[in-house]
Length: 343
Image 1: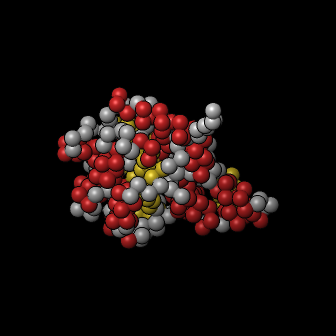
Image 2 (image 1 turned 45 degrees about the vertical axis):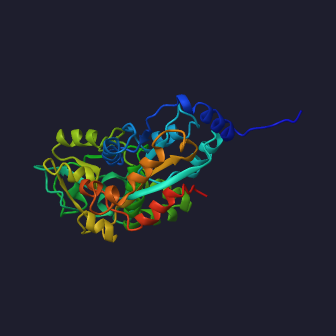
Image 3 (image 1 turned 30 degrees about the vertical axis):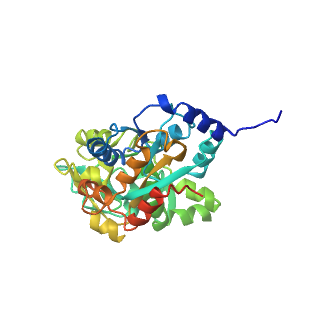
């Protein structure tokens, strides 16, 4: 009698296939609050135009969605994770350990990160990464020395900014938005002000200095928002001098409540993001569990529909909502059709 061993992935696929006749018939999706409105638009249109049930789309953040995605293979696990950042190596490893070895990465387009405030609040019209760093870092450069942050008002380090108390509502550490906020704003400001150079000169390693650059003050002037952008909006509504971090699409759909600031002299728009002129932008993704294709009805069809010209093209409803269409959309469409997995 020959022995046969099955990997966790293979065993899960066998189990999933055997249960196909009774498997759920709705695609299940979770993840990024930034991608949520786009996925919801696609899911609704998919349900209306295809002979499949409308997919179930939940939020929770990129990290939470990818964690659920990596729980394993089978009808009790989600099919797709939405993310406002690329999946991390440690998440790919966690997926593999749970049997999720074949992952299809789908880039849907681009989004900008904007800084917005109350429509009738102080005139926060223009920011640079240095301004954000000076406002939020626990240690900043003053007269050539790295010191505990003494600033309580924006005007104290930039006379062109309002004489208003610093109060910023920033994405929590589990949000994909936090990563681009740190990388393209906070870290850039740390370097531009000379703080990073001072940290290294003071004896820090470059890696430790990079980590220190991303720290935020803990005196209540920088508040992590763990919920979605609606929570940030509620905080702005209640704080006349507050500044919040939002995705471009969310801002564009709330211009009756918010006004946006430029970053490094460039106003955020689909045009300036597509051209690369606006400095704070990022690609958006969703990740598909290939083992579920052919088992969960409509999964591949949904993925193909999402990146179709009709939905994700420059004249589609996602662009109308605020998504910046991917110039390489045709290549993405071909990769999804071929079920190409991450290498």
